[in-house]
Length: 153
Image 1 (cartoon, rainbow, N blue to C red):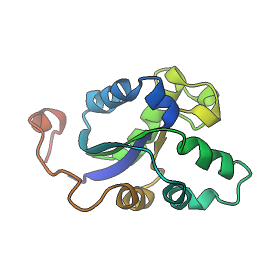
Image 2 (cartoon, rainbow, N blue to C red):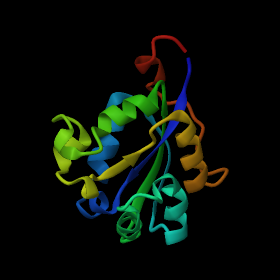
Image 3 (tube, rainbow, N blue to C red):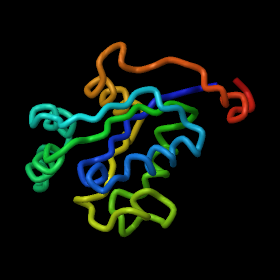
Image 4 (cartoon, rainbow, N blue to C red):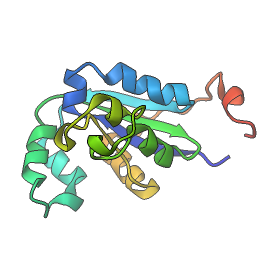
């Protein structure tokens, strides 16, 4: 079985609205494994590094200010095809284009308050996980329900 990891963050609006639990539930209910989690208020420098690919966009400064305005729930999820499936669970970046049943489709209206971030590819997930979590902070374990989720190991 090919297992991969993705970085998911509940943004300050999602934390303030009490959506950490419902977001975790969506990933757990799907069968993905939570291997790291922490609540942190990231520094400006940390956020600039995380969003460095967007630094030439007109919304960059506002994004950095908003993301540093309160705690972020940073998580690492693991499972088969978790990056692509995680993006589907989140919904489209623009919540108005997100289907009902997705996190953004159910909990958000504006792009600038779209509740969560998810890695957009396996390579970006590796980079983001390394930025947000130190060595030793990601847990390795076999879920008791593993054999009930995956047909083949």
